[in-house]
Each structure stands twice: as structure tokens, then as C-alpha cells.
Amino acid sequence: MSVTRRTVLASAASLALAAAFTSPARADGTVNVYTYRQPSLINPLFEAFTARTGIQVRAIFADSGLVERVAQEGRNSPADILLTADVGRLVEAADRGLAQPVSSTAILDKVPANLRDGGNLWFGLTMRARVIYASVDRAPITGISYEELADPKWKGKICLRPGNHPYNLGLIAAMIAHKGEAATRDWLKGIKANLAVRPSGNDRSQAKSVFAGECDLALANTYYMGKMLTNEAEPEQQDWAKAVKIVFPASSDFGTHVNISGMMLTANAPNKDNALKLMEFLASDEAQALYANGNFEYPVNPAVPASDLVKSWGSFTPDSLNVSEIARLEPAAAKLVDEVEFND
Ligand code: FE
Image (cartoon, rainbow, N blue to C red; front, side, top):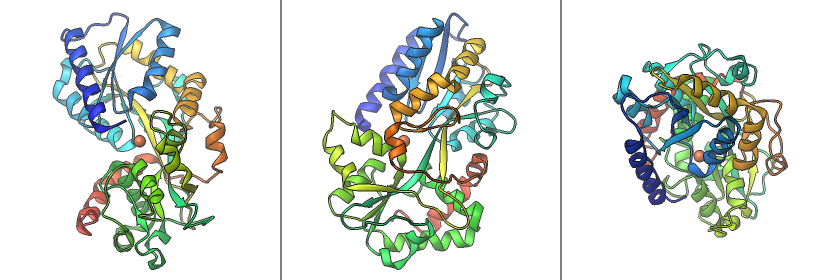
């Protein structure tokens, strides 16, 4: 989805909500969700929830600023649930006192301990691995480590989105956790020296760059491969996807970096009971299967399998680090990105 269209959707949703909410919002068979996740992905889950419970879901969609918005709205915030596309935003919200703990066993039993907050303030819902998209023609590799991306043999061959995007910050934070800051700084300098072009665009556009012959190795999240391969509206994305093969990086120190999308109950949730029902639904086998098959993510719920397409990419050993550690180190990662002038 283009940035322009997403912005329009976000504005339209905001207007609809402004009209719908009185302040403070009242519990009346609805639940209000602020979500960084895209409408095309999350609406089918909301529809399934409404069909099951009769509870209406009102959502505000945005690419940024939702944590800030909940903070500014304070006790009058209509937000019951925050849905994010990375762990950093969850920890940020929890650190600012915007979450309240949830002890529902229907959630705790479904989400592994390393993918949720130790104090039950937030929960992972899906996992995504940050992997290599390798050119089928020019880089027919079968294995690689993240460390090797800094090897001079890849000079002029690598492309990725800006280093300070949360997806890259998560990976850099994991590297800091396992190897320390000094080694991670050197690693970033090595990758920068290997870049084919200045970091820009999003994960899908890196596949497009490989397709166009601009670079041979790209860094991207797993699910975008599925989104591109099945994109009927923009079939050129299928060509980008077919130009690359997913290689799961691993190293002697840690497995493949995974991040989560996740949820939290807001501290002042006006529709708390309904919000808990939605959170329990999102962790359920039914909703986890919708995530797996609709967005090509890995369910956090171990009882639910990945989609057949996702399984066809192969298996990997996820980094066992608690994802909260990744979030904790993201500011340090952002500092290193600035220090080595990664995006310049
Ligand atoms: Fe994404």
C-alpha cells in the first residue's frame, strides 16, 4: 500500500472516530483500537471477532505517533488496545505508564514467555524473521550469517531500508545484545562500506532493487515475500519476489533475528472487558491462523502452523533472546546508526 493511500486512510479513520467518540468514551458494546498494523491485514481479524462476539471494533490506523497520542490523550483517551508492528513501540508505551497488566490464562497459555512482557504489560501476536533476500541469479547462496554482511566480498552488493527504521534497529539491537557495542559499530561500518546504494525505501523496494540489478543481497522481513508473491493488484511485485530467495541468516552466536507484532491493554481502557475479549481472541488458534495465512507471519501460538507458502521457505532457529531486551537496546542501536552515518 502506498504511503499516500495509508495517510488518507489514517485521516479518514481519525475523522470517523472524532465523530463517534464522546469523551471519555463509554463502554457500549465496542472496543477501540489504535493500530500500526495495516487495515488490509487486521480488518479480517476484527470482522471475525465481531461475528463471534457482536462487539464492534473501532480502529485508528497510523504509521507513527500512536504511542504519543495515547500519552497526550491521557485519562480521556478512547484507546483500549494498542497494536504495534514491533516490540520497541510496546516497550516504549509500557515504560511511559500507558499499559496495564493482563493476567488472562487464555493469553498467557498461548504466548511463549520470551515473546511477552515479564509483568504481562504486552504480548507478542506474530513473529517475523529479518532475513536475506538473495538474488536468484547473482547470489545463489544457501547460507549466510549477519556478520558476513560486513565481509568485503559483498562490496557494492547490499541494499536495505534506512538503518533507523524499527525493523533494522531491532536487528542492530540484537547484535549489540550478543556481540557488544564495539563489535556492532564495526559491523555497521562494514555493511555501510558494502552498500550498493544509499539506504532508502521499504522492505519490498529492496526486492525491487535486486530485481532491477542494483544489488544482490537485501535485508527484509519474511512476510513481505508472501505479500509480494500474492499481490494481484500490483503484479510487478510478483516479479520482484521471484528474483530473490529467502536465506535465513544464522551465526555461531545467535540464530535468526525475530521481532514481534503485539498488543497491550491501555492503562485507562474505557472498554476493558471488551478489550480483554479481543486480546484473548487475537491470541486464539482461530485468529493466529488468520495471521498466518493472511499475512504470512509466524504465529506466536505454537499450536498454530505457519502457512504452506511460509513453510516452503524453510526452517530456522529463532534467536532465543527475550524480545524486551531488543527493545531495551534500540536507543543504543539508533545511536550507532547515527555515529557511523549509516544513512548518509
Ligand atoms: Fe511490516
